[in-house]
Amino acid sequence: MGRSSFAGRGRAADMLGGAADPRGLRHATGEPGSSRRAPSNPSSGSRRLRRLRSSVSSLAYVAPLGIAILAVVIGPALFGISRAFLNWNPGGSSPFVGLSNFRVLFDSPSFRGVLVNEGIYLLGVPIWTILPLMVAVFLFNRVRFSRLIRTLLFLPAVVSPALLGVMFTPILAPNGLIDNTLGYMGLSSLARPWIESPDLVKPTIIALLAWSNLGLGVAVFTAALTGIQPSLIDAAEVAGASSWQKTTNVILPGLRRTVVGWGTFQALQVFLWLFGWIFALTSGGPGNSSTSMDYDIYNNTIINGLYGLGAAESVYLLVMVVALALLGWGLSRRWSSE
Image (cartoon, rainbow, N blue to C red; front, side, top):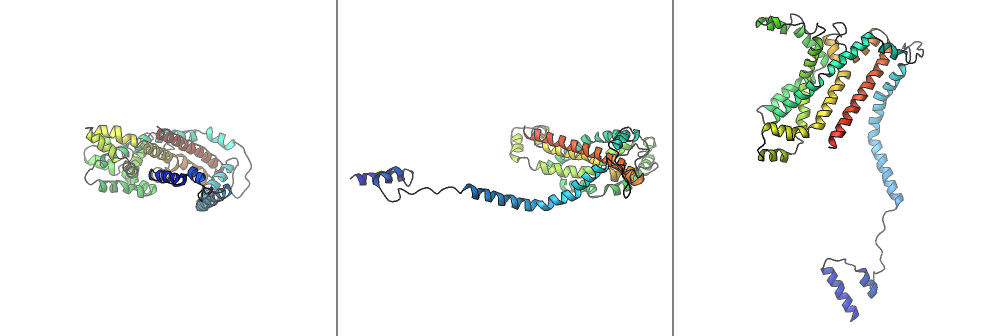
């Protein structure tokens, strides 16, 4: 009687979704299997072994890239930093001079002028960021032939800056294509020495960079726009939001990290990628009014043979680039956490 009662209670528990093995009932009835234990967890040693294998596998994937970065980036950077403390004479005696190269550069009016040039070029970063953002948002709103327009805008991004500089030299030269066109239209009073005036050469270069970077910036922001949830835009449209309200309240907040990343990239361009433009378009002139840091390093080392000064200026450049990169990274992290 007692055994059948317990069996009935076990079947009732199964019907109610309980455990298939009511341990208390089996222990009480002495049914077989009441002493079976649950499978034990894997040992800590096997878990450590699996983690070690996973780590070794991951390292095997990234090792070639790490070796390449060490050989091509970190190694030459450390070598250049070490040369900055020497009166470097490749192939000859290179005595240690301590911080002398850094002091000579810092006291040089020419180097201070280069820093001023870089500061003025940095004023173009808002233009180089806002302009492609505006074009990308405009084309994103289902404009006809938007794909064709993006393609045409992107073409300068695939052309070498040095080649573009060579192409624009006769266009911007005195009595060049722009000045002659203005004269033909009866606007000769607007003709200017675009690349031969110390006051106009840097704004001219900023404008050329805005044009050449426009297509790449539009592509970057268009890719970011596709990542915004369509449901947010649809909800704004259902709520009766205007195009301006959708842009300011939905689209732009979703692009904050992209704006910071692109702006940081453009700021780094000022220090790292102006050489081709300066070399082909102005050669740093008139005087040193358009010289950038990368072009000045070229002058100090290749042209003037001042290798120690060139290495010291490279260290200054490295510090500025790292500071800008850290600033952009910090802003991106701060905005992504909001």
